Amino acid sequence: MKTSPYSYDSYSKTASLLGEAVCKSLGLFVIPDDFVLSVVVPVYNEEATLKTLVDAVVNVPIKKQIILIDDCSTDNSRSIMESLAEEHKDGSFNTITLLFHEKNKGKGAALRTGFAHTTGDAVVIQDADLEYNPDEYPMLLKPIIEGKADVVYGSRFLGNHEHRVLYYWHSVGNKFLTMLSNFFTNLNLTDMETCYKVFRTECIKEILPRLQQNRFGFEPEVTAYIAKNNYRIYEIGISYSGRTYKEGKKIGWKDGVKAIWCILKYGFFA
Image 1 (tube, rainbow, N blue to C red):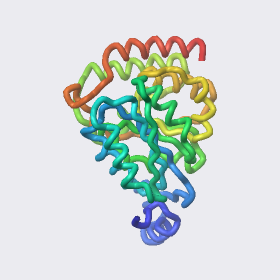
Image 2 (image 1 turned 180 degrees about the horizontal axis):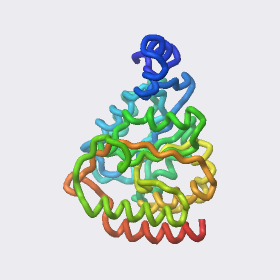
Image 3 (image 1 turned 90 degrees about the horizontal axis):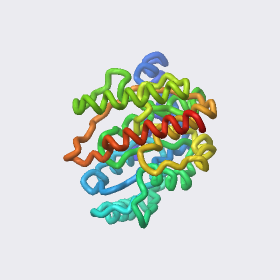
């Protein structure tokens, strides 16, 4: 493993050459050597992308606990997970934990299973497809490591990062759901439905016993509890390479209707 650009020694050398201001503009900072990021990956029929995704996560220069939760896949995902765990069984910089559902329960249920096994200092949610880029972990972690945030959302609608152009009505729906969620939580998020949510481990463990949604209702549910607990929230612009339904995208209009129901439910009763 090459020296991490976020190690103290590497940062000191760069700062001495370029200066603190340039390092800041480049997004460089120090990640403590003992810091561990838990990466929770729900998996359901992702044989086409799973190995590429895990390889990308492994290559991020941060010590990681990678938790793969198979939600009763019917394709070859489980055997790929087992091969990946075998490949990295002797790793100390990256460890892989495998968890299995014997019945398909949904993304929210898989995340709860994963959260219960996290041991790192922070937790990030990572879909098993290639829509979100693990190389962006460091910039998402920065507000947490610097002690400014408890939770960080990666927004697809902020900044000038690259985005694949896809469905207009999906973007309209996402923005509507975010606006409705904000109405009840009194937050000013731009992307409540984003996959990339990063938590201090203590925070997600605190709200874990209250989480109940098994599918995509997890997003408004967890956002409502984050707001209720008055956690410090930051948003950071991220890139996005969305999939088409032909390529395996799973969320549909019924999930949007359920999200509205969840926003109303947890807006009143969280």
